[in-house]
Length: 193
Image (cartoon, rainbow, N blue to C red; front, side, top):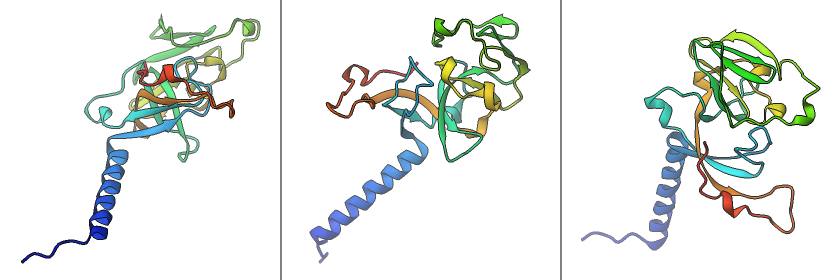
């Protein structure tokens, strides 16, 4: 005759299994991140919380235009989020705030420049390169090009430092306001493009 498990033991086993599954999913499949800065405005706002697909790049290479989370090369304890602009083997240049890939102007509607800064061009922010992107490296930039610490300042991103591809906003609130709490319902479920 089989002994029945105690209710306490069943709860402990269920909690342990749930924690193990959560840890495995977070480690290998999907992970949540919070956006702490305005470097990806208008695509991502401060206070957005996103999910990152950690599986996609095991089956294919990252592509231009994808928004990725990665270990910051200057301090791998910090995670950064930027958009892939330059791919391995490409020639890249920023000339008067316009990005050129292999001498052709990139049509990139995601970035933001503000006309107030038109008379203040700052290298490497507004003029950079030309450079060639090394093998197994990427050139990344924030969508808020005037306020983004990206490859123009710290160099190329190694492929092995990429954590995954940002794909959806699951929560958003205005972090500038503590009371009343301002939740941005219109951003819930929005795909990161």
